[in-house]
Length: 194
Image 1 (cartoon, rainbow, N blue to C red):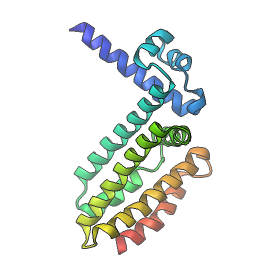
Image 2: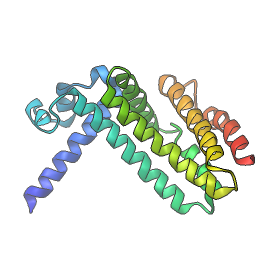
Image 3: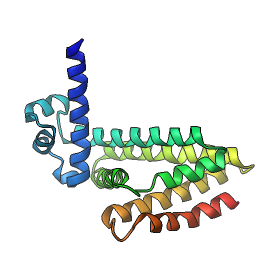
Image 4: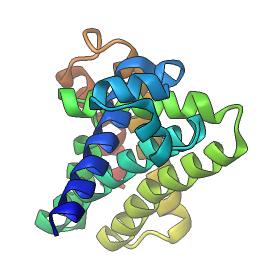
């Protein structure tokens, strides 16, 4: 049994190293060597788990999706109603702390890499679509709007979050938490009032 625990710990260490390296260095700095240095292992070990750069990129995006999904699931469970869930999920997606700034940097970096790679673009669209679909479902549950209207409103919220997240990833000092929340709240208040 200790071998399985060691393997799980090694996978977790590599996974965190991939994500942190991507957040710190962007897509061009996400190399096998950089991940190995951060994980404290050989490049051969990294290569065994991730055969190429695309595998590193896809893994980082999957980690990002899983982190944000788990956080949104928890927020939704704790919300008093669907409207409260929408508000909490949207505001909770903003890069208002170090962890979420790193997530925003990975999101922007992955989008950059996806511009030239159809497989990465498909993964990016699917994961981003999951956020919009969650918002659509909650908006439909919180009012009598049609699915088409809920989709439009969810799209506006996702665009606001992604826009502010992109700006904050590039200029965290210029986009402190209060400014992020104020900017996204404009859209959020309109969507929830309708």
